[in-house]
Every structure is written in structure tokens, then in C-alpha cells.
Amino acid sequence: MADETEGLPPRNDFSAWYNEVIRRAEIMDVRYPVKGLYVWYPFGFALRNHTYTLLRTLLNRDHEETLFPLLIPETEFMKEAEHIKGFEDEVYWVTHGGLSPLDVKLALRPTSETAIYPMYALWIRSHADLPLKLYQVVNTFRYETKHTRPLIRLREITSFMESHTVHATWDEANEQVEYELGLSQEFYRDLGVPIIISKRPDWDKFPGADFTMAVDAVMPDGRTLQIGTVHHLGDHFSRTFGITYEDVNGEQQFGSQTCYGISERCIAAVIGVHGDDKGLILPATVAPTQVVIIPVIVGKRGDEILAAVKDLEKELKAAGIRVKTDARDMRPGAKYYHWELHGVPLRVELGPRDLDNKQLVCVNRLGVKTVVPRDGAAESVKKLLDEAHDQILERAESHLESHLMTAVTPEECNEKLDGNVVVVHWCGCRECADKLEELTNSSLLGTEVRSQYVKNDEGTCIICGKPGTAALVGRSY
Ligand SMILES: Nc1ncnc2c1ncn2[C@@H]1O[C@H](COS(=O)(=O)NC(=O)[C@@H](N)CS)[C@@H](O)[C@H]1O
Ligand SMILES: [Zn+2]
Image (cartoon, rainbow, N blue to C red):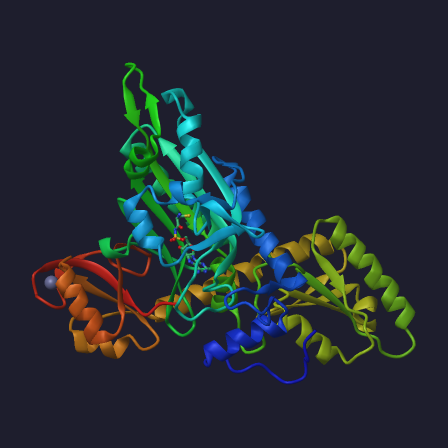
């Protein structure tokens, strides 16, 4: 598929590196003839499926999966005023069936509130029907006008996980917001991606929501990537769509709702946060191939080595490890290059000396070499895969920590914003935020900041000097 000889651009030229690694590591093909729509290569799709299997495992603890239609009638889509305002210039419309114009035009879902909530209104009658917690993983469509980019900003979001829950009270919905934030923390820890959670300012919340909690990653260039959002919808949508239930006293009450979204940006974060100059570095939790065995054929013992490699592969497979053997007739170095580009967490070399010494030489994707006994290979490999995960998480955490700054003046903030995220204090008023954004060409990302590297403390507003609280400022994708 892709020519493997020339190297990748250096990672500090992140945009060029990212575009090239998406192609060379066979994640997505960007040549599809519609802007913002991309094609999954099989390797990328395998990575996507392992990632979403992990996400479904976490969601299935207290949600059920379902599937709603793609097309939303204009009559439903246009019901919630805020929602329309927020999406009217992003939504695609279907106006014809064949040659005949449709009497009601149909929206391609940009997100599915207006498809799901009319059905929730039919399903929910009594408090006994609550809480209702469903999710779906679907493609959604947004006519993005900003720069589109594979996995990061698509016009067809191919892997849009959206969870929609209904509760008896505002507080119970709020507990669900906290639950989904905890789920995000676990999901991203399993991906080795450190996150910062914050409350988006009012002008940036999801259209129709009470408030939005956002999950941000910091990419190598210091720009943030919003890799998840949890919205407390209050009863805005339940009033619009008539989602009511009979409470224990026989009274009709409006439901309180949340919705939660994660797209393939989670994969962009794995690629961006972990990679290096040689290509992808994949966490073993989602790597399509976790281990590659490289037979080192020297002299006349080729058959013996290949037989030993076959046994080893069989043993690792039987232990549930996703393993491949690369017995191609090419230089070991060229093989290493290929598997490093594809981010394989662990390489196992087996040559004549290793045969005689009944050992395996294991090298993880960060280059850490360990010699282990051939006996008990599956256990040793699983342990090395866990250690490799800890190492890439530690590497990512220290990158995040070193790219989180503080500033007390707009000038200082402006200086430090290059390649970093900055924590300031902000009084909470829009004017000061606008001023800061204008002075520093950045966005005020959020308050109530939750990260082990950020003190969510009080201070004086960076613009007006009035009492303020910690706020995250950054440039985002
Ligand atoms: N054009 C896009 N391409 C890729 N991912 C996107 C795009 N637009 C949004 N996302 C991701 O999708 C997540 C959810 O989108 S959202 O608009 O914030 N929230 C919703 O749509 C809610 N209905 C929750 S499902 C965002 O946090 C962001 O990570
Ligand atoms: Zn202020």
C-alpha cells in the first residue's frame, strides 16, 4: 500500500508527521472524492474496532446499546430552538427520493437527540421506566467549514458513540454526568492518554444543554483536542419532546437528561499523543498486532528456527495474544522498521543463540530490551506488554505535565501559549474572556479544571484583577 523506504517527517513538524503517519501506517486513505470523508484501511479499522470494543465494554456496565435511524424529519429537528441555532449551518438535508421531492425534508443526523427523544417520549411513562441509559455507535454528518482532517475533523464522523440517558431528577442526571466522566477517565487510561477535564464556558456549551463538561488531550504541538463531552441537558429537551413520567405521587414530571459523545478523535489522540519519529506507538489494549515474532535466520539452522517460531506463535495465540510472525525474506532491520511504523508494542527475536540458550529477546516499542526464558513465554510476554503500557502512559503523562504552564499577565500567557496549555485565573465574565482570547489568539477552554497537574484554586482575574478561579487557556484542533 505505501512505500516504506523514506522516513516520516519529524514529529516536531506535527501536522506533516500526522498526515504522513495516517497514510504510511495504513490508518485512513484521504483520497476519497468528497471533502471531509475518508476511507478506513483494514489496519486502521482493526485499531478502531479494538478501541470501540474497549469503549463498549465500559459502557455496557450500565448502558444498553441500540440503533436509531440516520434520517431525521425536519419537523422533529426544528423543535428545539437552541439546538437548531447550534446546528443549522452544519446539517446536511435529503430533499428527494429518486426524482420526487420529499414533502418533509430529512436531516442526516449531526447528532441524534431529535431522532431519539420523540421515541423516548413514547417509551417513558412511569418513574419505573427510569433511569433509561442507551447508547449507539453510528456515523453522523456535520458540514464543517473549518479545516477538515482525518480522525480529527470529519464531515462524516464514522465512529460517533453517543449515549443518551433520562433520569427522574436533575441531581440524578448530574450523577450520571460524573459517572460518564469517570468512564472517560478509565477509557483514556486504558489508551494511555492523559486527559484534562473542565467545564466549558457557557458560550461553548452544547446547544440546548445546561452545561458541558469536556475531556481534552494535549497533542505534541501543545494544541488541545476535545476527545469527549458530557452534557447535562436539564429538562430542556424533555419539555420540547414531551418526555414525561408519572412519579410516585401520580404527578406528571419532565425527565432530566444527559448525553455523552466520543468520536474517532479518541484514535487521533492515541496516534498523536504516543507516536514518535518512527511512527505509531500503540497501547497493547487496542493494538491490532500486540507481538511480532522475527526469526533471525543465520547459517544452516533456518528450518529449526522456523519450527521453533511456529511453536512460539501457537503458544502465544493460545494465550489470547494477538501475534504475527514476520518470516519474509528481507533484512531484520527493514522488518523492525515496518512493525515500528505500525506501532506494534512488542517484538520477539528468535535466533540460533536464543534456541540454544532457551531464551527469547524481547524489545518493546520504546526500545526497552528484555531477555526472558522460553519456558512460560506467554506469561512473560503478557507482563512485558503491561510494563510497555505503563511506560507509554508515563511518557505521555510527563509530556502533558511539561506542556502545562501558568501565567498571571496576558503577555506571559501569550508567550507561553506557543506549544503549551496555560492555566490562568478568570473572573468568569465574558468581556475578560473575549479580551484574553483576542490578546493571545487562543480560547478559554474551561473552568473547574480537573487534572493532577492543575491546581483548581482561586486567584485574581488575569484581565480585570477581580477574584477569579483557575481556567484553562489553549489553542485547539
Ligand atoms: N467534525 C467532527 N469530527 C470528529 N469528531 C467530532 C466532530 N465534531 C465533534 N466531534 C467529537 O464528538 C464529540 C461529541 O460532539 S458534541 O457536539 O460535543 N456532543 C454531541 O453531539 C452530544 N449529542 C453528545 S453525543 C465532541 O466532543 C468531539 O470530540
Ligand atoms: Zn475579569
